[in-house]
Image 1 (cartoon, rainbow, N blue to C red):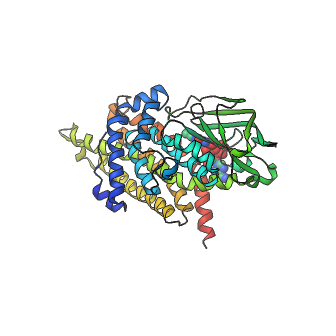
Image 2 (image 1 turned 45 degrees about the vertical axis):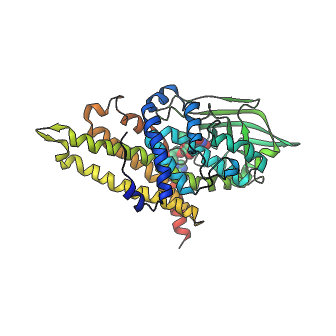
Length: 390
Ligand SMILES: Cc1cc2nc3c(=O)[nH]c(=O)nc-3n(C[C@H](O)[C@H](O)[C@H](O)COP(=O)(O)OP(=O)(O)OC[C@H]3O[C@@H](n4cnc5c(N)ncnc54)[C@H](O)[C@@H]3O)c2cc1C
């Protein structure tokens, strides 16, 4: 893995020396312990427990959570810095942080103190994994139409239905599950969120045979009369949908950095390769037909990265950032995919081989053009926010 020089870039991104020092720790771990094993993680179909625990011991998971629940009490920009550095070593390892941050934020806002104290330290230590279960077989974009039913019964709720396309479905210990406590006509106002222990009786799970992200995996979770204590409802009844949408604003900027990291590493490797490899008696890099598309990628990666950090800084400053988060989410995964595609082609026949990391990175980032909301849905959000501001 190429080490990307960052001190001047850090200044341009508005990062402090503390951010830089976190970045160095995470980058060292990513370079020495993640990048060499990235292909093995894919073959094993998981990020092994000892790797997750190491991430936890280094303080790389949930850095933005309060110290009382195992975090470091730092800002959301630091969370982005750390996640981006980890993704430079292995895209999928960064998913562990992403889902901990997304679900942990919902727990911190809407879970009881007891629940926070029980779950969050396990996530920060890397001992447990958490999933976010929103999508259902009949649709994901129109999430407010979800049908999985939660029926109140004394001091428990009974959950019946199916979630599908859930990252970490067969590996996670817990899931934040969105369920209908009201009527379908109520749409978003009839949805509540629950913290569900995925070992509960009545739960079964499957794993899909996917194109990429195989260390994380995606699958279905089936709920057959699963009892969840009412104390594990997150927030008020009917408030679940709003909760997840608030969490997504944060995670969309993290997803942007995660995808851009895979692209930036690929591009750095490619500049080096075309400077060294020769054809027609000169280095490949003498051909502007090859360097100009890469120069365009370099430009756009810098701009998209800045957008992601600006979005996180807006969150830290308590400023609105829904529109910016949606921009990060549609642009960065597509740009990352296009960049890695260019990098693969610039390596000629070797780029197509599993000996080099480009094909895996290409498959991995592609998933995030769909996961967490498609480009069309992000553009609907941007248009809505722009029109609202008139
Ligand atoms: C790698 C990956 C990881 C995922 N992880 C999770 C997870 O952890 N948890 C979870 O809950 N879900 C997860 N998902 C599911 C994901 O969030 C949904 O796939 C996504 O929201 C789209 O829903 P859908 O697949 O049902 O497509 P649909 O909603 O059926 O849409 C199909 C197509 O139509 C387009 N479309 C839909 N409505 C409109 C419209 N109004 N205007 C224009 N175009 C429209 C969409 O953009 C898409 O291209 C994951 C998906 C992937 C691929």
